[in-house]
Image (tube, rainbow, N blue to C red; front, side, top):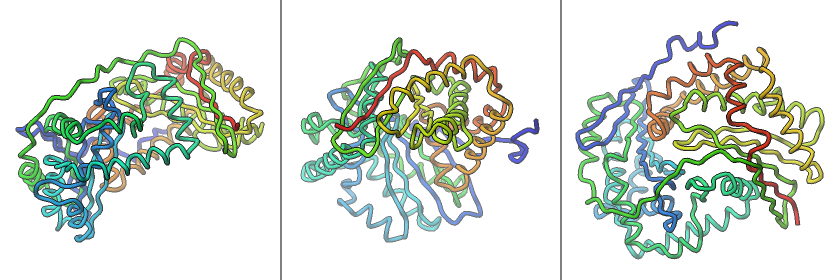
Length: 424
């Protein structure tokens, strides 16, 4: 079989990683042909950092950050970025929050200090607190209009019995109403410290210039504060089938979601093996489940499989959209499909196709500065940025025997969480 990585030549981690004197990490890659710079700041302050009573704090803080600092009034940061034709945004997940801006190289020295200022010295003024909480509450209300969000959130609560991954990133309305500006400031000053931050800079800026700019911008951090710590326990695999059934008043078709706990990010080879198995099962029209369940048997409207790498206990899912009368049959047949995966080797044709698909997706995901910044930042949070370069090499060397062993270890047809959505 021809090697799938010939087009990549030698896969290397092309960025530079620097640990600054104050503990902050800088990851930089110079792209001389690119006239823009992406600055992406990753903070180890996602949902897993929240005490249970502070649910939703990390996401709430993401909103509050943009309400300014002692040096920038509310809305002034957005005006500065837009005035030079740049873009800025943020996102919160379980393991991190990150804040990113894209601007022409000529404007990065003006804009990066502004991003650093609101991150390090967020004011979180009392008068903006209630206003932004209303925005978050509206997000929570809107999420309950989405059956797929409801189904996935219910699956997480069923699968994760101990780990904060069971919570909604948005938080809960009742707890959100108990938050105070001082509690939000406490969370900010506890976690938005240099040892918890990684700044990724990709694009048309040379190494020394990037380092000097980051060192001068990310310098005066707020005085640290302590907040209650969340004790995070590793999530064990399910020992039986955990089932949840929901009924919603208006859904066009039923949903079936099945989930299994996967390895930590430290077990990168097993994690990538599950990624490969997700493609073999339901990664496109030629995959097993799509071909059998949708094309041949016509039991589902659509079906997909996904593996989400997380710092602690990752998650492997199979999702199906289907007529309600097929729910039980599809679940039973999925059990048979998993049994086959555990007892028979994947064919050479399937393995080659899935490897090519994953490696091509990897190549396509590194075409732009923002994509590179996202990959480096994410891997630096869950593992290390250098591990991002290992992905295609691990994919290529995985064997059918290894995939069978991983399926046996993680994808039991007798131990999983399942959520089904039916109409009332």
